[in-house]
Length: 324
Image (cartoon, rainbow, N blue to C red):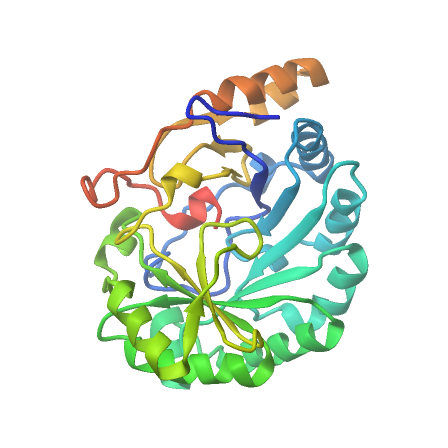
């Protein structure tokens, strides 16, 4: 197993397959941003499979495909099929904005992806357009229903809750997820880059207390999917609502993940700069034993916690550069 200096087992890899996105969410990418990674610097499918195979041999059981928008990477279902066949990998999932999902849902499910997280911050068309810079809600809802029809379970809706922007939509989104059998996850905006710092941060603690009372929710003792969210459920268990609170109530003590960006940079923490560049090692011909040693060395760099609250100006890279 990969165990860091603080005794945390690293069994979850978030794998970015592109830093490109067809939306411009105002808490993620600035308007007009064009400084994307050159495709020649992207890890190839062979390189990705090799890195994930070594992670799996070292005890990593969960891999999530992310971006940017991962469905902009050509032939992604082919990569998914290769990864889902790796020995030791138990869970392959995807985070998407949903705009391309209706065309790819069936192929992704056939390739072995079983769980989907879909980013959707409102059910109001004008609000979605304001946040994303695109009139994308109809395409997103079409993709969401295609995923439901294809058999993905669970389907989680990730909603970044922002004060004065979409906080008034939380109850409507909760009712929508109850109706369709989706899991709702409310997320506090993180101060990553200038875009993240300018997001309208909303403390989710009082929001959660209000929702528990309104929808008669009780806290669950166990997480769903091994991630950082804390969950509440309806008393009959038919609906679950999660809350990801990196600012108001951080979860660093139980962090079990690292992130691999599209250019092969392994980031140890979303809110810190510790990293290891794997692409130069791969292209210099490192063998599997050397790659395993490099991963163990990288995990030793993982910090104890982020400093989003104490040093919000520290991080200059955008979320899309890190991988979602």
